[in-house]
Length: 470
Image (cartoon, rainbow, N blue to C red):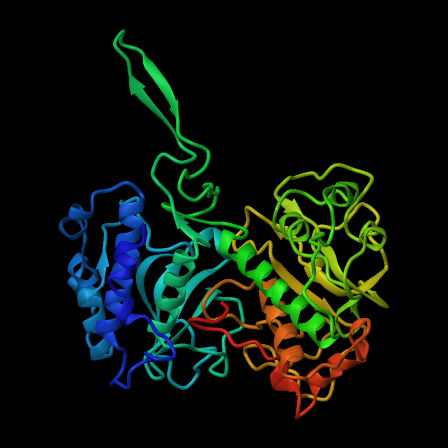
């Protein structure tokens, strides 16, 4: 399935193979990665691999006049002479977030008022923005950033990245099957002639037989996105197991001979947890022999899990693709729900306050960038000392900012994955940052204030990028 992508593995950005020091864009590397993504989509849509080169052209070959004199850096021109594209009437777009190469000059003088040498290198899908923009490339820095809407903030201080790093992340998303290129018949209806002169309706499979992914209404063919991938669940369960073992060893407990799960199916049914990531995780994760999984955060029990603040017990969900916030690890403190916009799909009588703790975010499985395993840590206090940082190095001062990405240069804005939270827990326990007592992780909810100190902020900082989170 990923043969074309494996052919360019030597071009992927890794810790051992970082971006090269070149004059301008690393056009050879970027063109190789670009063409691999494009060809992968072409093949997975059901087209013949042998037809890719004959039917595509280097981007500048479609319209040589696009290379306006003096507007493009030589390295960008070299990239556009190698990066393949298709005519405007084609049915194979470049990637899920972007339709294809665009070459829209300037338009970002509000970001670079003195010298706007930007171009929107890849245009985003119009349904994803009111005033669509795309992947913006600055020819002075020779770095790029995803900027979906021209009305969104854009500043030089944001985390612009090398183009090869962004293309590497997109390939990682494909390989993880977060982003899937679908066969042409999935979710489609076609008509064929029959012997008596009539026409027969033929419905394609509702989901991709290879990946289980379905076509979304506002996705660009052949691409789609899944709310969570099998690998997301597998890695979250693996990290959970590592966390549990680490804490139990610190408690002096031997290997457990029992394997009860955190919650059973009956408890999840009573709480009306829908099929999906939360149900699969909680019904497969081993029940630990302690109470606190992190400072001030309790492992769910049958009784307290049943009292979910955002799962409406009184009515059926209006849309099976709209999932409410689910409280995983509860704290004792109550927190006002004012200005917590990420709670999204609320019950008919939303509470004025809710327990603090770790929530799985609400998720619309059919909209833009669904992240069903995304989570938010909701603290009962703000972090105001100025040390706590999001992944883009902006301040993580609000009650729900910690461990979040801020501006994501690779993708649409979405919450951090559960496995990133679990990795933070594991590292803090293993490195001795957190103490363990007979109840599990000690110190209480105030321990999270370490994230807002000069000596502790880095323990709660989540880096994004190739080989990391995105």
